[in-house]
Image (cartoon, rainbow, N blue to C red; front, side, top):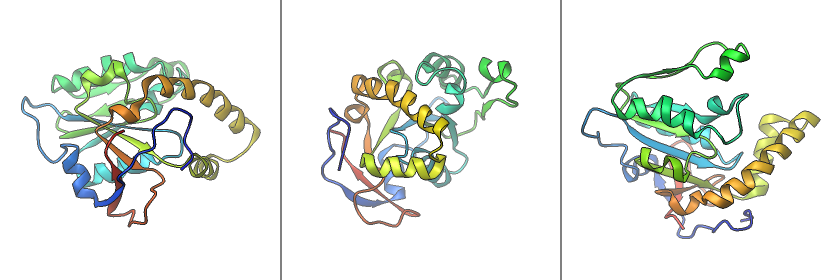
Length: 214
């Protein structure tokens, strides 16, 4: 498995049912106090974060997903933690619903807002940079998705294309992502490592490949 310099390769990979991952993350049990459980899903581009969030959300009825890309949109690749904490995680900790329209959405004419009902039992916070020191106190559990860089890059190209503007975007993204993740080292702090792409054969509809954190 080819990884970025400094990232520790997980060991002890095993195939488990999706329901076991829900249990290991504590997403099968309600929290006292009437607030949702907040679980981050982090990983590099092309690791399958959005797909995993959709799988886990479907496995936990009425749970919700927050995409950090919606905070980063026309704002900053990674300097959105304060927006997330102040406008989404804090109200959820108080048991309140979320209806947040980022300033960049207004400035650039993007309609709608980020909404999360107060009744959601679990909120999955999905995106590169979600597992970081300044957000640790808000989160109840977290996932780091680890996979071969070449496979992740192939996935990203299939999804987003290989036109010149996209290549420039990837270059600019990696210029910030690489030092950010090297500093935060989310693979060391996550509750669970999930393969993305997975290193073992499995049924992606009902199973995941996991390892303990490094």
